[in-house]
Length: 220
Image: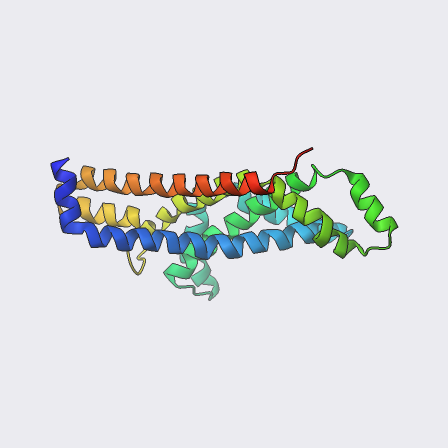
């Protein structure tokens, strides 16, 4: 316990900055990833087989590829194609693509819980298909997948440790632990502090997700 106290006295501000950077990367990847996943979901509902096939391939690729492999491709392979992306946008892009694929997959599962009669009734009343999707289908699907999306957000927060694999401007929690372990003998206490911050953040997200689910839960 004394080692942890000494570590916080020496590196307290650095841990605070690292935690804020972790939260920043989580938000900057989850929000656009979630929105992109919604767009993919809507487009997959359109009666256009070629488009649905392309988007299904998109989801399957980014849902199954390891995040670190995708990051390596973006950072080291794209420059060979004259596509240069800085390190911070590369990490955010990696997490965003993975998030969008899982979001689209979860939303599709949520849509499958909606009785088909609702959509048929809306179409019979003269509503356009795109309006049926936005007014009837998506709201119910979103309410049905709060918990999976909460788990996705927690996984995304933990995956920000990818930033430690590239020369990132600034240090998130995992990168800070690596630096402390290399510069001193306080590697274990640093890991304990970082793990506690990860756990606390995950529990906070889980609590927020559970609270939101209770408010929007669909009783069938």
